[in-house]
Image (cartoon, rainbow over all chains, first blue to last red; front, top):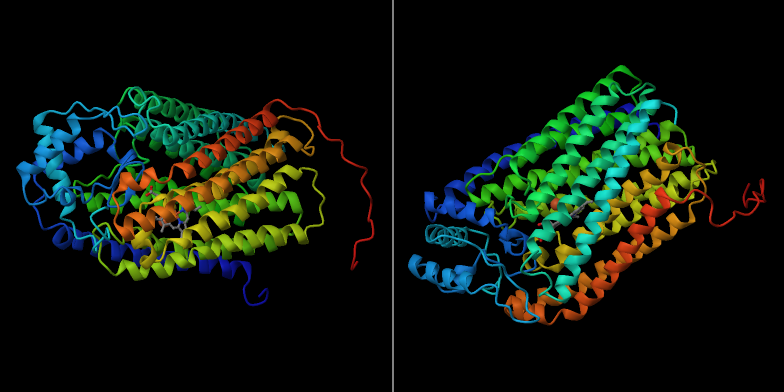
Length: 150
Length: 451
Ligand code: HEM
Ligand SMILES: [Fe+2]
């Protein structure tokens, strides 16, 4: 390979090829961006309430225990489909009530069971969080997870 | 040490090792919470400890890279660093920022995007530090001799700093948030950091084996070409189930399969260089870490990465302990061990002592590597059972976790080995000044078969 592939040729292949792949990647990302906005997440409007819910989710760093669409910390259950699991995906009021009840019951204090912390969350924020989880649940995730267990 | 300014690397390596200690102690606590979940649950919940664990890891690896750059760029460019003062300012910003981040996590102030939880002021601090760094090394680089090692190192460092911009971009649309989040996470560890890894490994091989520079540099360009050609579109393996279009299932599967190639190439490169090399460099610990790093990177990133990268497999394993197993071994092999190789090589020179055999350092290699391998196996077993029970049978998450206690207990045990190894490493770097085991006499040209 030494004759055919000199060092400067190897370098040029590296730079040229990388630029090519960056261009392809950027084009596909732009297309995916549109797909996400127009199709995959279009089932429910991205309201102010959903936005607030996302900030509540972030402020309490839920992702560092749970997974959301399979990404996160694997220490606690998947929540991307939790509203489906609770049978509350189609019912905002029910979604809020179950979530509120759940959050208020934490930490369970049960010996030997993983503990979820207590969070100070107002009613407005709790409603927003429930809407955010419903919004996440309606995303077209190519049929993932395989079942309701998440 | 040929250039006075290389000395700044010493401060970077010290700070890095301090954070390394914090990282592994945090990890041990997390491992213990898995075993005994009520531990500290009200004062220091799992999510807070995990942020400290992952953030400390990322920052110390970056500090190691920056230190390595300040060490090797002068030597390659054949001149002093543009400004030593700027290098120290950069370090101070990063250390203050990191301690600030850890402090604010402890009092409950943080963002909520995994790994990017730093408060905004810390993110800006990192940005400023990155700009100072790029300015400082680029001026050094531009004024001096350019080699493939520094070309690749600079390309990697520039791109990884530019990608940091995506740490500030957090769309309200969760799926978009996830897509751009991977621009930092995936395009760091599976693209730009690989360039840094290849450059540092190339430098170490050059110094430790004495193989001709031409040979090393051609290898390096081929390695990094395969890294970017596969790694950029390989990002698709994270776009399968987050709301992105279905075509990523094919693009992601095909290209991320090729991501194994650069890791295999780096392992082959390291071994071939050592076989070819005629130099008997006394720093055997640095050599062990270099070979160990490229080998464990091949297994952790290459083999364990491929294990769950095909979309048909990932559909079931996504977000299980399989991911955790892979994440641990890949980070350890590729980036932790590589940094420790660089420290092992440079510290004797920076501290002005003989690069003796460093037996304790080598013992720490086996302790840590053995521990990480064991941890990976236990998490893989746990993940296999989890995948079956939860994703195939459909049992509820918490019920499944209750069945995995034995594996988490064994994982905690392996964590103890890793922590002991890490502490032994730090001790052997900072305290030991003499050879512990006396080397035998050097035999000159003892009959080498085939010569
Ligand atoms: C040194 C290089 C690498 C490092 C440090 C690394 C690290 C990680 C980490 C930490 C995660 C979890 C991210 C999260 O929190 O969600 C992850 C996920 C993943 N990695 Fe890697 N990785 C590396 C290379 C590779 C390679 C080469 C492949 C494929 C051949 C690969 C395939 C994957 C896949 C498919 C996932 C997603 C797992 C899931 O669906 O849950 N990785 N990696
Ligand atoms: Fe990846």
